[in-house]
Image 1 (cartoon, helix red, strand yellow):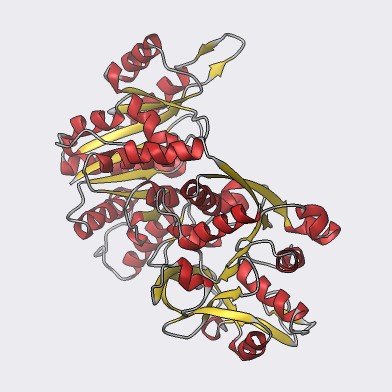
Image 2 (cartoon, one colour; image 1 turned 45 degrees about the vertical axis):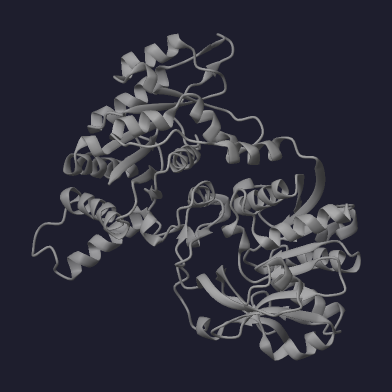
Length: 534
């Protein structure tokens, strides 16, 4: 097994996750099997209870692990199928260490950061290795910035791990910022030098330095960084700001042949990558023939990362139809104040994503009504499915007080209600309906057609409230179509309206299964319908 560790310096949000994912893409195109993972230094056990304003979206894996959005990049950029083993936080590490101490597993020893905490981090790497024997390279991104006190234990653990497995099997990649001082008209390398010096104080010497820059990196700066950071000049790689799409990142890193540097460092034999299919995908993104406009009506709309996978899924589906998808971001509370027509206006499609809490709910319901009554293609995801059900119950079935017990606990008509197994749950973390679930598709529905006529599907979930089966017969009699139910429990998974160009809403999160050149079928159908509507 070979290991790549990606660290970051100078500032956060440099794109370590995209760098790691792009390297994974390039290595896969060389014929190697890769696995990616994220080590985050925060004390939360996972991001599941964190606000989207704090951490962006929560990306859910097949096994139900709630993880950082970077794991979304990993799965979209590669064929890796990740699990809870591929996401580790300080919270998980300390939780395990304390549990071991309470159970007497340390045999009376004084529990210390070194070796007990660092051993726990190393053990996760060993478990990942043992569980993936056919993997050629494991790429691990370390969250945060070198010099942060909370990340020091992870870096120390990696230093020890490199000694354990041999330096010839480990490649350290450091992603750093090269700022341009406009007044002086020059790129400054000193922050990179100091960042690497901090890393070397810990005992880690980077093999490759990836420099985030708005401009090309000239030979003088490469030589300066190489000399002061103790690396070869050719191992100083430019990671430029891409112009149009993040999917250009692997192509940009390939300009400096970072994949060849990695395989040479690790002594791996592989083929020269053929990026023609990836380039073709990027070309369709950059130079589309058509255009459609889709309104995304949410409650965390000002933060792009809150709906990251949804935006990427729309982009990917657009490429499949040679179409640029222009996303209009709409705050649901604005609709409550001014009405759907005034705020949404003329668009080709409306998407209502997931979320929690009462804020903005009536605005989302008005958006679903606007789409239904004006025959605008509609796609609801999780909460977007629930509010579409409420809207249909109120305005088609005449159940004026239809609501969800999430928003009104004692509503007289709970068309959306708390799952029975959720009653009495007090610990919010990791207690929802999470992960992949098998569902039955009903023939004759739009969804059955979109999925290509398969009888069952597997999709990822993250929610507590469900479609209340007590109202199913009444809603179906009024024209609502149930297109899919879970195989085990019979829970409603997809609703549709037949007399509509495209009205599909899913309880699950299809955005977690879209990949370049392989869009999720519902996203693909939604973009196609929006293009036809426009």
